[in-house]
Image: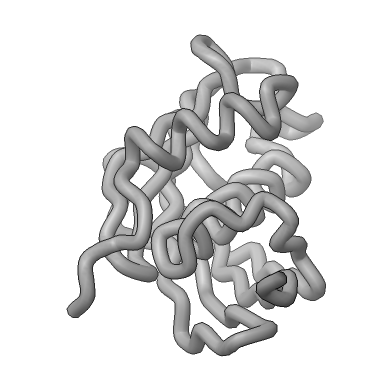
Length: 143
């Protein structure tokens, strides 16, 4: 397996530069593992993420999946902040616990213009996924 195009520290620095409103100290997102096209990120639990019924909201899980794919794309192609989501499909599998969410993202194909991957989201402490996501990112043309 090739080395990642960017390290976790390099990706964190880039995210802080290009998305300071979403990735900053205390935002609740942590890059836990970065390998080539295979990453793990964590969304630390906060009560603001709960919806009626005491479950973590779907938009919170979708945001985490999209963030995980963005990090995975950087791990494979390097600093391309203009890469964008073109498709994201989520299947909610079970009620997540009121705990941190962990997202494992793997890119299945990285081409010149598209990266396709999947994300499994887990409640911390559980081996059963709470959601499964497939997503496609558009990669900007090299200039």
